[in-house]
Image 1: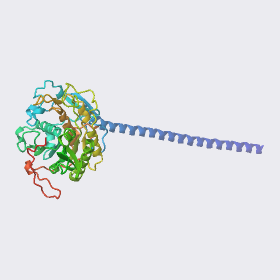
Image 2: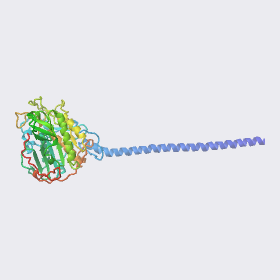
Image 3: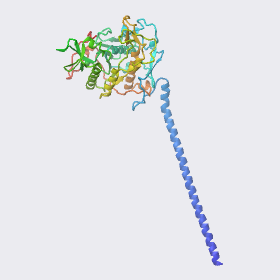
Image 4: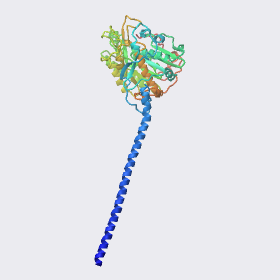
Length: 467
């Protein structure tokens, strides 16, 4: 009996201990499960809070940019690469705020380019604005631009298309000047194609906007000895124009060349290519153009301090002649819907290739495609010589104004004014330059430096005929 009782008691104690152990184990498991679930909940809550904070920061950062973008303005962050926007890819849209100036009131517009003043009746060509697909060109305040250019020197180098752009910029800037007489040509010259140098001074702001006529950018030479009779002159593809020293001390330098690189201006007038002492009678124009731009690029790399000078190269400007003879010119009332092959140019492609391989920053103003649509914007018969049609040059106001708006957009970026002006999605090449003052009061005071570092006496450029 006693033995049976002890066994039963022992069994009961064992069972009781087992139950207690199971109870304690179960409690620990429950506690661990609860802690695990609590940890998971905290992780979810933490993630949610982090997500809300990120959304809030993004909201605070993005909303102002979106708000300003919808109104044609924006904030550009220049401490990194901006999101993609090709400013030269877009469309022309009607805008009643154009034109930006009255050519008749601007004394620096050649009479031949003042189409409205020469009797053109339709005005639709005046009221068009360039709209890039993914951004907007800033609508700048002229007063701000004038202050930005204070004590600077802006230089255009090229052919008559460059001179047209030069005239356009002067007229744009003059709209913000109260005393018009404070803006004058340095030597008192009238604006004509016969003069190799024209400089307009904005005396109230101490800056100049200058034009150097260099249609090839290269040096032109006389007929070499023992050359064939058909050779009257040469174009030295290995030497930049002999007035190139005058381009160096500038803050903004804008080049172009292309319109004269045609047989009629070269071979048919007896001008052939030369490299060193060798006459290149059989060299085709595209090869010569590529050689010339290589020489130009090397000159820029050696002579231009791009920490100071912002260098641009504007691509080829398409014409809209009705045939290859350039005798018939059909100026349309509205822009063309298709480029019809005018959006591409061997000259433009060559410029892009040369600049791509340069060791200093150059901004290419690739205006070929955007200008190809403007068959409505040429001079046509609305010139001072209506019997001679012109489907190469542009009316003013007109397309060159947009080229200058783009240039000013780049300069606004360089000078830090862009936060009020530029849509943040636009890609702007950021090559800043420091602004040294331009103190010369006239062209005669310019003292370009020669290759040995000594001051060189300026040569007379006035009335030099290169036509």
